[in-house]
Image (cartoon, rainbow, N blue to C red; front, side, top):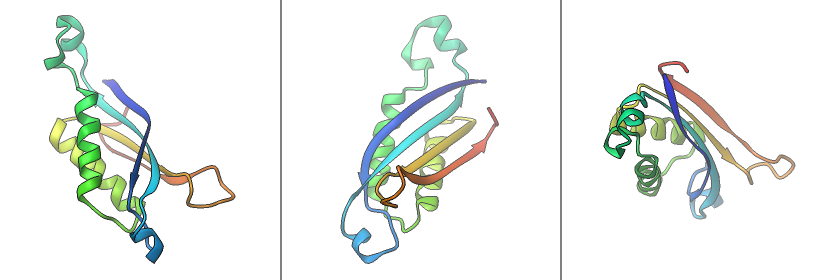
Amino acid sequence: MDTVFIRGLKLETIVGCYAWEKDMPQPIELDIEMAWDNSQAAQTDKLKYALDYDQVVKRVVSHIDEHRFQLVEALVESIADAIMNEFNVTGIRVSLSKPNAIPAANSTGVAIARGVTF
């Protein structure tokens, strides 16, 4: 199985348990790896057979704009579900980092894998 990836996607969203987190967007960073068979796209050189990562990013952006979560665990799971359902990928890994969550750390976050293993 092939992998299509998006690394270091920097966005802002409202996510958190504390009162101040529920009113102020925070930076997050996403790494997304998707299991996808690239053979037809490679053979034909046609976008219609490829996993269009631009469309994936647009969907992730609209998804986080439409939803609010307390936990990054819930947010990352919902992102994975949306991508798997809407783009018909057979497996996915999503890592979400909150760079400002712990001042003494570079970043904290959650990584999940669903579906076909890579």
